[in-house]
Image 1: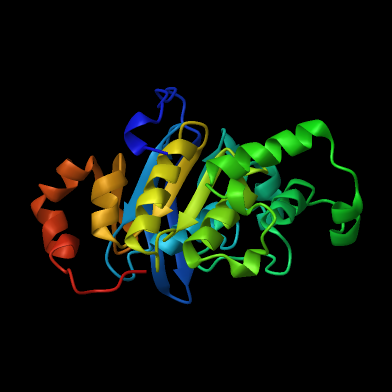
Image 2: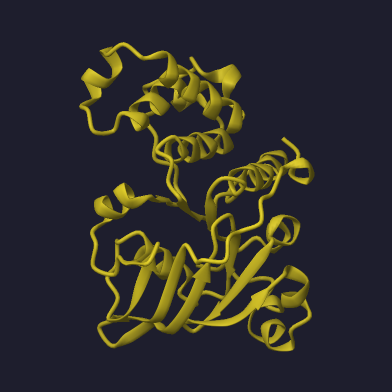
Length: 262
């Protein structure tokens, strides 16, 4: 894959996701306060900000793990503020946490098959005959995540980066419209990080992708639109060049190069 050669469709004007005056209160501590955000179809959006800015909490709200205290979240104009995680997954929102969650004793191909047939039990999924169209889908996603040559390898033997790509593939094969990724490049080698950035660009030609990231070099290389969060609210939005030239952003975030972020 080459990020520069990936086709990119212009997003439509109607937002896929709209967050309105969102607040999240944890026993008196406001992790999110009055946050407004819009995502268009086909966007690749990076969320950055200092430790405690509320980035991961926002993803938790978007996937149904955390319920807001105030405000609402509209997904395709449907209020999802009170929906449970499994309901949002069925609606088309996929969430990947930082640590990969895969079936290490199964092959790469079997992991994808299991995700594609997630309503079945494990045994019935693996013994049921696959249809030609299902095999074609698995081949497509194996190629997309760069693991076609390891389809029959046990997932537990993959490198850290390959495990991350496999889990992304396991989400993608369920065909979500919105994909939420928490530090997808964390712990990767330079080569794996590069391939991950290229994969994000390839994915966003079909899905809307939100990435929480603390690695500023990764953000500089692969971000299209960046949202900077600070103290539970949106501080600034724009291109990476816009963000880098903003004095307020530099003061609260970009100048703190030695810190670890949530």
